[in-house]
Image: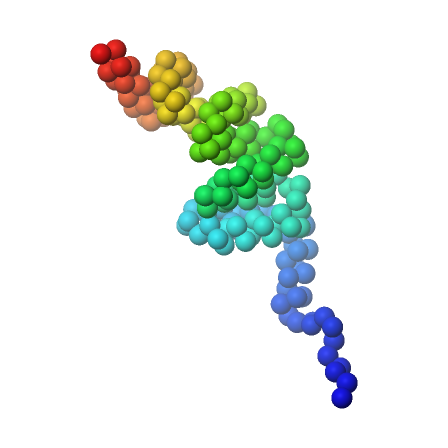
Length: 182
């Protein structure tokens, strides 16, 4: 008896998947927003699936690559995260978010020099991102480089006087400096 089943099953799921692909090609924002919502809820596996889906359709979309890299980092997959961020930088080497993201990965990997370079590069591109200034101060503190931390934190407090974390961090640095003198 001959089997008359088609080689490729045609179902509503396949049709829906094709519609999702077409929708993503037209506008990737809904997928990216949904994936970041999942990250906020610490549902990294689902966020990974969405970003991986997006990257499989458009592996040159820097926003998708950044999200994928962030998700991999949150999952503890640091080397893979670094590779994704490096790809994003090859697509656009003028993206401060990508530099800040890969700096965080280098920091976690213990490569402080690369982390400092990437944070500084992010600041050079866009000096208005408070979090990057804050992170570079904390990185210096983590390195026990208190004088550079003090200088960076003073600059941070001047640039962002409305940020209460800056003043608190500056007090912590000065206390640590005073303790280190004894």
